[in-house]
Image 1 (cartoon, rainbow, N blue to C red):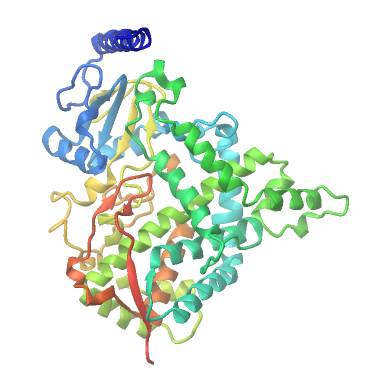
Image 2 (cartoon, rainbow, N blue to C red; image 1 turned 60 degrees about the vertical axis):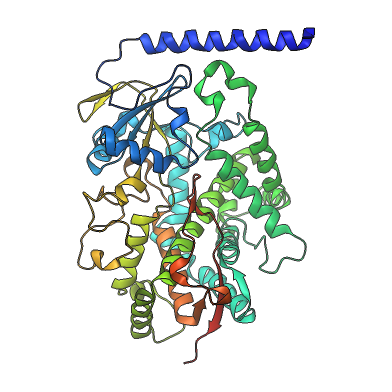
Length: 497
């Protein structure tokens, strides 16, 4: 054994002993009345039991150990809630103390983090940023002002699908393009990608955002579980994420500088503001602030909504009787080309389908992680300070104690039901609840409804090669957004009126 190898082995042994000692010290601390959980191994705790689908593995643990379980990932104590009662304790009763964030390794970028809409603490800066986004992006007034633009982008999608009818289409890419250009037009005043992309810009930008999502969704990161290793970025997560951030930023750097010059000119008036970017520049946002907010809006506003639409379309394809009822309802309620909010509100069966889709396929299955700012109690168990907390809404949606035949897609269960997804009914929490509820809920719902109605009204859908819809692969891939493991590919054929 040469000197270098010997040094490496000795260093590794020393490091493991140090970690073991620290883990024992933490474990030996008298933390009474923790939620129950499975046995833990030395050093790694329960990491070996999580797998690549933590929403599934923790749901299985909850069935054995109870609605609120505690796990240890290295030196990090983790609590997972899997019932409405447990969710109420976290997101309502103790919301004030449990609404801090555990920032994933991917987003621990010092130059960006203070300007985060998603990961910042609930301080005055966060409140101001959230208020700005809600007012300019998600309020009823803002949505009304955006209505024509949204119609135009939806029209572009329909034009593309009419043009390509009869061909096999990766509908995920097409929907992503629609949602991304809608947001980019609201934020920057222009489209950034094309449906038929000859130069690869769509794929490059899309993959950068997907990579950011994937990095952010990695639960099993050694550095986050052993603080002494955190600075080493052993898996290259921070470095990889920053690389993807820089790629994304390059798509709008010139736009920011051009608009900044106009906003800073002596002739500028606030009445000239045409985009969300203009409002941020008026408030003297730096490039770092703008980049962080914009990237988060793109990631949250494209990936989660695309995921939701893909799961809904997959279920409609698999269930012909559901599609037939939707077609009848849409045909009955829509007599013109324009889709209005008042018309959408009359589509009771569509609303039931969307709720059922949220139940089975929540786009963020564990919600985003919370952190205990102080020690408190939930369901008579102690939640120590700095505990990382997840709410498994995926598990709640498939709980036989809450739902009859929970694995079946059955929209009829929501007909005449008062259950909603706006954060007050804890059986159904796709957008979360409390201080950290998703501010884009109104925009997201309107987009989902309009997209689905337009595609149902305009086209017949079919799987390639005459594949049997009942055998459509419905496996998922875990991340911040729960995506289909295999993209949904369909053939669209124009309906004959």
